[in-house]
Length: 115
Length: 113
Image (cartoon, rainbow over all chains, first blue to last red; front, side, top):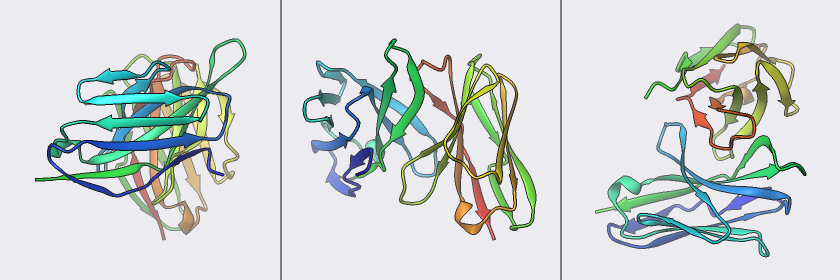
């Protein structure tokens, strides 16, 4: 089983649509969760962290379900500029709370927003 | 954005060549990373350096040899590569090893013939 699994898509949605991406992770020791965004032929960039209580940043909402080892990203009112690959990323922490510094990436979900 | 730079941006090499990839970060970070991104596959962590010391080698073949002379520079020396090594090689840095926000360079797109 992959450590971080995402539906690769592609998701093709019209402008203004709401779209949701899901991600599951296999290691219950995973402690930190993120969504990164990668534009075509560019480097990944941090979109947002995912907190246990769920968090929102403008049109983007991230949710975490530790019991199900499941993370989601919801994009409302999609813009053309949202077209990109969305990467689900997890990190493990050591017993003392420090990070291993090892981010584990999912394969990514491709989103295309069309006019 | 020039926080993390990588050179060259594109590289074509034969299997008998020796080449080096360079990464430089201007962010004052102490941890640096090499990742490999192949088509249709997730990013794979290759090496981790913290204050110039290697802390992680993710079972990478010896034909990839990293070097970190200081906290701002990271190299990846390549020799006798295989065609399956063709990929995008990304460098990243973070303020501390425990700092989970990593900043990526633009990558070197490598083609091995």
